[in-house]
Amino acid sequence: MSTPDYPFANPPAPASTIEVAPGVHWLRMVLPFQLDHINLWLLEDGSKENPSWLMIDTGLGDEPTRALWERIFADKIGATPVKRVLVTHYHPDHAGNAAWLCGRTRAELWMTRGEYLTAHAARHGAAGYSTEAQIALFQANGLDEERSKELLVRGDLYRALVPEFPMSHRRLHDGERIFVGGRGWRVIVGHGHAPEHVSLHCEELNLLISGDMLLPRISTNVAVRPIDPWSNPLRLFLESIARYRDLPEDVLVLPSHGLPFRGAHARIAQLETHHQQRLAELQLACVASPRTAAEVLEILFRRKLDNSQIFFAMGEAIAHLHYLQYEGKLARTVGADGVARFAPG
Ligand SMILES: [Zn+2]
Image (cartoon, rainbow, N blue to C red):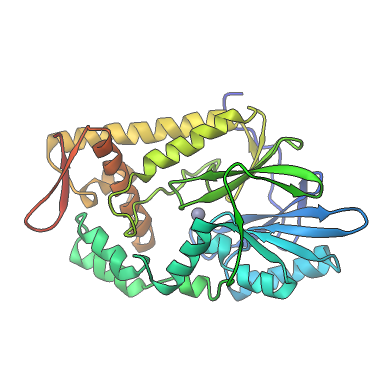
């Protein structure tokens, strides 16, 4: 199989579901961003005598999402209890409604420790998860005053989109097998997009719930963040997706954005090629003259970026330069202006 293949031509309509495999139901929530939707998964859990539901991811913690959830509760969930809410990672479109859903259903929250604590840190602007720390990192990588100010005005969206968050969690671990409706699902923890992102593989159903780690059409955002400003998240990401090669070539991938697809191995290869091409271009640009991350944005993205895109793009540009630095292909020097530039060592 050379290119990804999409067995479902259309996504479910708002507040409706599609059963993509026995006991695995697909629903969508609207996002008010350029990326305008997120896929969520409802799994039949428990036994015939004692059925229940497990939800995977929650949508933003806003009124439109909650209104759609109410329709799902009325039409689909009914009187069957929801016992578990599993959140793949802390990003607002995945975690935003966790507290509301857990409160409404009295379900347990299942998450890795890294994602759970990061959600709390991001809500409180702690451990570098503040707009100010983010802008300081961007400025140390060449972002100009004007664009920095615009980002500051945009402010901290996380708390607005994740208005509350549960005070306890059931901790998930890499390699652990959890049972849902009697079927085993293996937890695969991946890095580079979020600290300890969870994907789930069910051998029996030949399914991978990939979260944001393997998407069919867009490449996952990989960004350096102020909590560890010297990190190499692109290496972590590429190592993480390479692990999916252990899964069968024809595994049906259920991603958080876009349509379910088969052809995971081909998609991994595409993403590797994509990043290697970008890395080669950045390296070449830095050979011509030392560059900051801000100065390579146009090489990396080839289009004019608005404010919300700048936020993701800067993190991504720094990540690519760090990758080249850790490979020994570029050296990082900080000038008298406090700005990091990358050039052959
Ligand atoms: Zn994400």
